[in-house]
Length: 157
Image 1 (cartoon, helix red, strand yellow):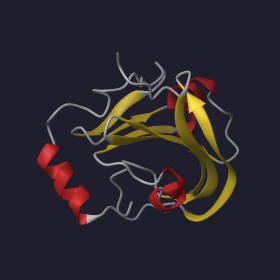
Image 2 (tube, rainbow, N blue to C red):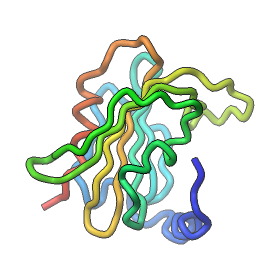
Image 3 (cartoon, rainbow, N blue to C red):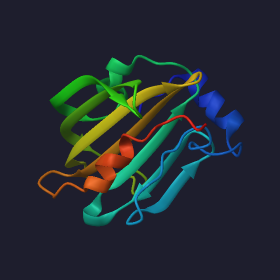
């Protein structure tokens, strides 16, 4: 993912200070296991059928409609995009794309990108932008629990 230098500095400065879920109710389904955590910035969970959930907490408000650029997807084919409401009345932006993406958190530098379907929801909570992604191989069956999870970026009360 292409990340501005200021954002990289913020991530390094905040690493170890909480988690990406501190201010929100996001919870991965039980069939997903925690794989990678980068301080309060990002968490990755691995699930069945080579699926992945990613939650990012970006410490600034960003353009929600610019998700295609931020998703690091090559040759993205947009399937659907729209303004939506989550958590009752909270404004959010939904984007679904198919494209090539390296497997997140694989740790394999020469891994061949594979066709993936990526469903994303982005919203603001406080001064942060939260983005939740459900990534799965094209053609695999939809995990309804994972689809529901990305829509659960609700502020904690």
